Length: 150
Image (cartoon, rainbow, N blue to C red; front, side, top):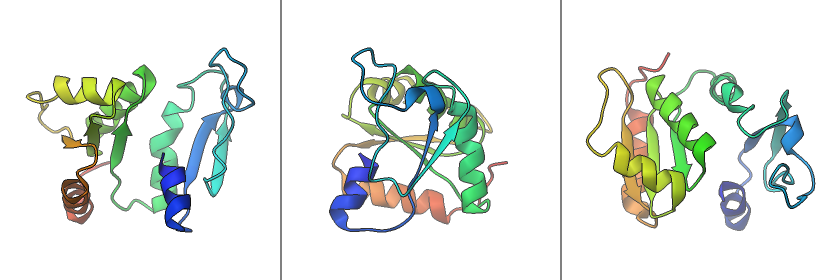
């Protein structure tokens, strides 16, 4: 979705995908592989054969390419792997913005975390899908605040 939005808006900022080697390929009907998104500017293929094998690499890649600037994770829809990644981000101090109304993991995490916030963990903020003003304000607040993430 981000790649498509980037392309439709005519932006040329870098957009890096991180995928496990065994998950990139033509759709084979099994859900085991998917083609890479042509709207990403870069694709980093890491070791692994299954969805989720790339998870340990995501925060590390983000830290390296942003030179330790602030990072915000955004969860739109997603499955169990994406939900686990969002929880891991929050636990490691990275704020997570969940777009509610986008379905599946995003909606489940938003309802689970509505009242639950662990001390020392980053916040999980829920923003309704399509509410661009609130999304802009939440992202700006997170990206303007002093970073506490390791």
